[in-house]
Amino acid sequence: MSVATPFNPGPGLELALQGHVAVLEFSRPPLNFFDKALIEDLVTALEYLDQLPECRVVVLQAAGKTFCAGADFNGSEQTRNPDFPRQLYKYAVRMFRTRKPLIVVVEGAAVGGGLGLALVGDYRVTSERARFCANFNRLGIHQGFGISVTLPRVVGIQMASLLIATGRRIDGREAVRIGLADVLADVGGEREAAMALASEIAQSSPLAVMSSRETLRSGLADAVDAVIDREASEQAWQIVTADFAEGNRAMAERRLPVFTGH
Image (cartoon, rainbow, N blue to C red; front, top):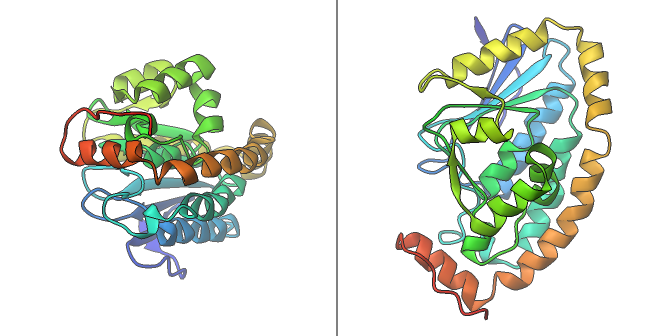
C-alpha cells in the first residue's frame, strides 16, 4: 500500500511511502532534463527522508521513457552561463551526504548529467532497453556531476576513461556486465525489481544498514565535493568554445560533430 507523506516535494516531484520504502519520482517531460530547481528539490526530499524513521530505503525513478538526459544546453539560457556547473554541482553534492540507501531505476536513457544523477545511488536497476552514456566529450565539454569520481568507482578507471573519451552508448545488459548497473530486469519490470531489492534491504536492521553504508561510502562525498571544482572550472571555459557549440548543434541535428579544437 502506498501512502502520501506530509512533505510537499515541489512541482514535478512525487513522494510516497510503501511500507519502509520511499518512492521518489520526478517528471520533466519529454526528456527529464534537470535544472538547478530540480536538483534542489531532490536534495530537499532526500534530506527529509533522512529524518523520517519509517523510511529505510529510497527508490528514485523518473516518469516517461527517459530517465534523465542531463542539462538542456540548447534550450536553457541558465545552462549556458559559465557559472552554472559550479552552482549546480555544489548543491548536488549534498545528495551524496544523505544516509538512506538509494536505488535508482534507469528506464530509457541516462545521458551526461543524467548518468551522474544515476550514479548518486547505491544501486541501479535497469533493463535491456536502457541506454547509459557519458557523452560529455562528444559535446565538446569536460565530464561533470562528480562522474570523475563516481564512474571509476563502479566500473574501474580504465573502463571509465573509455566511456568518457568515446561517449559511447551501452545498453542495460552491458551496464550490468561492467558493474555500472546492478540488476537487469525484464523490460517493463524495472520498478517491480527495484521494489523487490528495496524490500530485501529494508528487512535488514536500519541502523546497521546505515552505518555499514557510511563505512563503505567513506570519503565519497568529500571526493565528489573536491572534484567538482575541477569539473566546473573546466566546463566553465569550454561552454563558450566553438567546439561546444558544434557539439550541441550536432546532437540537435543527429549527426557526428566536426570539432576544430577551438
